[in-house]
Structure formats: structure tokens, C-alpha cells
Amino acid sequence: QVQLVESGGGLVQSGGSLRLSCAASGRTFSNYAMGWFRQAPGKEREFVATISWSSVSTYYADSVKGRFTISGDNAKNTVYLQMNSLKLEDTAVYYCAIKVRAADRYDYWGQGTQVTVSS
Image (cartoon, rainbow, N blue to C red; front, top):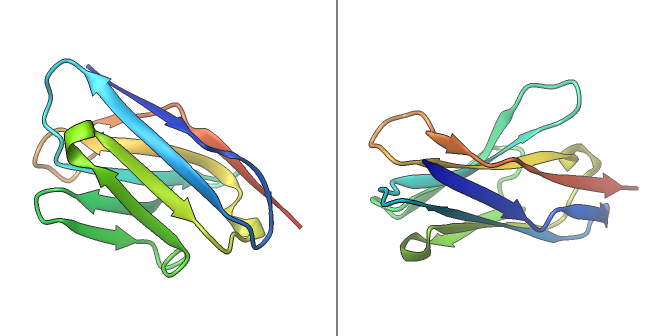
């Protein structure tokens, strides 16, 4: 079992910045990739960004490209999401996830952290 704990959410004005953090812990596990997803009220959960340790690559949803930056430390099983130029539509619960197998799906998820952008 792997536990993921997110932190760093909060209330910020439009145009502001926030930095989310996520740490994974548990018994010995592999870490192939970590990612961020979000779910706004009344909407389905959507992909935000991911970082793949094996290929040292990052991917972003078009809606956040150029504003958000994902980074992390594979050895520490941590991932961050720097969010700049925040918009009202970025308001959501943000979830961290991890792939512990070389597969498409994420295996474990955090409880989420609320990000609220105000005008």
C-alpha cells in the first residue's frame, strides 16, 4: 500500500500563484511516474500534469500549459506543482497520483487539496 499526502492548497486571487506538494510513502514500491489531476464542482476529474521518471519527461493539459510546472524528486517520492497566473477556472480539488507499475493507469491517489481562485 502507498499513501499520498498533498499540501499547499488554499485561497488565492486571480493572477496569483500557489505551489502544491505531494509525498508518497509506504513499503517498498517502484515509482514510474507521478501526476496531478483536478476535479471542479459538478465536473469530472481531469488530467493536469505528469512527470515520468524513466523518460525524464513532463506532460501538461493544454489548459495549464505555460502556467503550471510539475517537478519532483524520484528518490524522495515527491512531486510538486507550481501554479502561476491562476484563473477562476483553476478552482478545484487537486489530487496527486502515482504509478507503481509500468502501465497506463495510476495506482494510488491522495485525498486531495482544495485550490480556490477568487476574483
